Amino acid sequence: MTKKEQREQAWLDTLKEALDAGELIRPNFRYTYKDKKLGSFLYRTQQADNKELLAKIKEIGFDYKKAAKNSVRNQIHNKWLALLKEAVNDGVRIYVNHRFEYKGQKLGTFLVGAKENKKLVRKIKKIGVDFDDYTVDPVLYAKRFIRDLWNSKKSDKPKFITRFYSYLLPKKDLLPEELIEEVNVIWKIRFGERRLWRYPMTEEQRIVLWKRWRYDEEKNPEGKWLQSIRRMGNLFSFAYRRKRKVYLMSKIEKYFNKKEIEELKSEGFFDEKYL
Image (cartoon, rainbow, N blue to C red; front, top):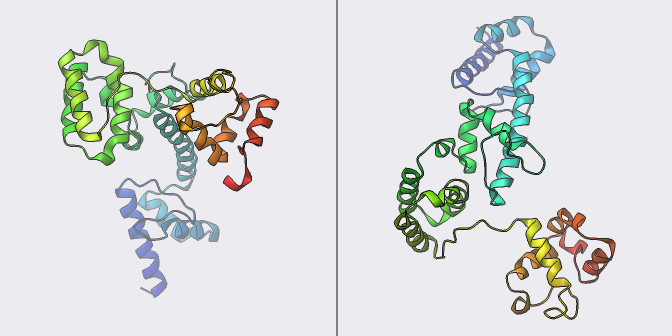
């Protein structure tokens, strides 16, 4: 066997190993398997139209056409996963049904279909959405939540916030008071803060309050969009972050009229130095 044939056989062995491992293989320069540029090998082989080598690749079980379809499907899945992560980070209550929408997208329909895809289920679980939690008895789930909370680390807080808003809070009326109190006590021990049993305000609700404060002649006679934390209270951090991060302010620009935008700019909002 020549050195060239040895290299080709090594690539074929790697390809078989990746297929046996259930890898979603993509014939492009970005795809690697165990730090080996397997995607590059497959792409070059296809472009060179090496019929003998292509036949061996097909015999192993790799289908270029199927891989192309999977690549497109994977891109679509990644877009939905990114949207789901955004919803989770916004503290949105997640529903696994066809009626649930987020930012005008049918996120619930994606989740319903994803339940049958084991790889997608694992990725969704990493984001903080566990399909099993939607079918568990509320009391049993609360007990499991408490157990997991006892064994958690401070860095696990974002995942527990997601679980709380998505599964526990909606079932509050079905839980005995002692379980609710137990959650409160352990939450305080673990994360050092009081656990409130209500949903956080959405971004739109905060904008409404911010605008209401701007036009409150008693509390804000100067008509400013940003004042001290003593005067603004909880609204301060919301407004301050949007002054220091232009991309956050740009996302909500549509909620303000031309006059309000000019006022905001005069106070340093939309300033390019914060890009």
